[in-house]
Each structure stands twice: as C-alpha cells, then as structure tokens.
Length: 433
Image (tube, rainbow, N blue to C red):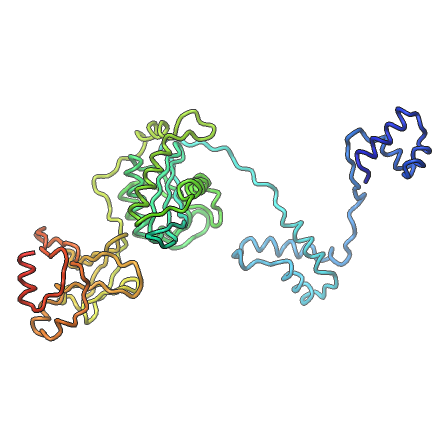
C-alpha cells in the first residue's frame, strides 16, 4: 500500500507536469496499474486491500457450529469453568480427530467472543424512588499498621447524596449498622434499595429476580419499610451509580492512604467528606447534590420511632466453663448458665448474651482469633466454694460493659479491675467502686 506522499507525487506529475502514466511509472518505479489506481483515488483517501471473498478454512468449517454451541452454553457456567481456546482444541482432537492447528481455533474463538458494545439507557429517577448499596475493600494505616477495611456505601439515585462508613468486616451486623447510619445522615429512607446478591440479604438465588432472602434481613427491612431489588448475577452495571461512587470515594477519600488512630477517626473523616460532597454539582445537573437532597427529603420514608437492633442473632450453648464460642473467640456468662442454650447478639463493637428474657452478659467484641473475654464476676459463687482457683482464674483486665437487670437497675462494676488478693477485698471493691 502506497503512502500519501507517493499519491501526492503521482498526482502532481500527472496533473501539473503533464507526464503520462507510463512515464510516471518508469520514473517512480511503480507499476502502471498502481499509478492508475492512485490517480483514481481521491486525495487523502487510504484504500486498504480487501479480500474479495473469505479465505477457505477446510479443516475448521466442519466444527465451527459445534464451537459456537459450546461457547453459547458456557454463558450459563461459572466464569472459571468455561472453555478456553486451548481446551476446545484438545476436545476437538480427542473427540473428533481434528487435524487443524491450535492457532486457527484461537483466531475463531476470538472472533466469536467479540461482543457488540453494550448500549446503556439514559435513566431518570423520581425523588426517594431508589437507592443503591455496595461494599468495597480499601487500605488504611491504623496506628502505623497498614490494613484493609470494608467500606459500606449507599447513594440516592435522584440527588446523588452519598454516605460511606468503614467496618472491620462486611458482615450482617455491619450491613445493618451502615443502613441505619445512612438513613439518619440522609434524613429518611428510600422506597427501594438495589443490592448485589450478598449473603447478608440473600440465602439463595432463584430463577429470574426471585430470591430466598435472609430472615434477619427481612425483619430489618420490615422495620424500615423499604423494598429491596437484587441485580442479576455478575451484572454489577445494574447498580452502576453506586459502583461509580465507590470509585469516586476510593480516589478522593482514600488518596493518599489515610493515617488514622482507629476506625472511629476514619468514620468521622468519611462523614465530613460526605457532607462536603453535598456542595458538589454532578455532571448534567444545574443544582448541587445538597440542593437536590433538600428536594428529595420530603419524599423519603420517615425514620421509624422503633429502630431494629443492628445485630446478628445466634443460638449457642455454654460449655462446662460457662463460656460460649462465637467466631473462634469465647465469652464468659454467669456460671449458673453453664450447659444452657443461650442467644448471642453480635453487634459491630460488642456482643450481648441473653436467655431470651434479659441480657445476662455483655462484652466488647474481640477483633482477633482464638481469644477469650472472661469476667471475674461470673465465677464469684464458684470461687467461694473453690477459693484455691482465685490466683489462676483467666480473666480480662477491664470490667465488663454495664448491664441492666430485669428491673432496669444497672449493676455496679469497677471501671478497671485489678485482681484482688482475696474474695473479701473483691466484694468490698464491688460495693465501693
């Protein structure tokens, strides 16, 4: 294929200098057919060689329909269990005695897998009509140690108002806590929220849009009165607004990597960022996010007077040492509840253990693995009978969280517990904290 400079030389020689095509071909070393073609081509037009008909593929044509059927069936298989070009080539050799090259299979598979560009519809939403929720994993420096934390994000489709909160884990209690704090921040509850098929809400994906939902999630949703909508599997673009806002938060709230003392400090920073974002004007909008949120708030569902507990509830049995195990960690309960089936409420930062009527023990939630939170008070009656075990009882240094009795009278525990030398001094410490 000749360049535009060659075409220019031919055109000037013919039209300006008046030379014949034969003479031009001789002087420039081109064939007369090339000279004729360059003169007939419009200036600047770049013609490429085109096949008059597709090249024959005698070894492959007999199997092309089979390959297309296999690739079509792969769309229903898990992404990591789909045919590669190499696997197709191996099956063709073994099952059909294919004699062609692997390269031809790779070329055909690449052609068949080319997808037409997906067209996205321009959508518009009414105030309070819908919101979207997503999780992301981000990196932060906590007390000089680089760690990964989970970022909960909720965005309103109409106004674009955003709420973000960081958690240690993306579990169900954090999922509920993120919703509760987002609703309070936004001043109301959207009518419908769109999710992925996350296990905090979905137990099983059924046909179409049908889902077998988690009962705790249904209870939580019932208290706030919003509806839920779940995306099709592997179709994150169905909640593209929150996907884009997650990327925005990662690039604007976490660059550079935040240096923080704890998650509480990080969440204060994130709340300030979300408040500052209310002054932002999004593309193709004439009003700020905050102005649109002010329009949207009257249409949001009211925050209910009774708000559900943001916890996961698990049935556990206390062992012979009056300990219950939750996520590899163990927590003590009063010794009279040993061998008893109890209910543990797992909150983001604490656990409460109940006998279905009242809270019998409360502990700060342990963050590590294979740890114990043991309260000295839970074994006081046993120590009266077995005083020899006083100096060797495993217990934490700090007192348990204050509890409320059935009469709503708080127990009086010392703020900081240091092991007393004997039971008499410990009783005095309880009476006079």
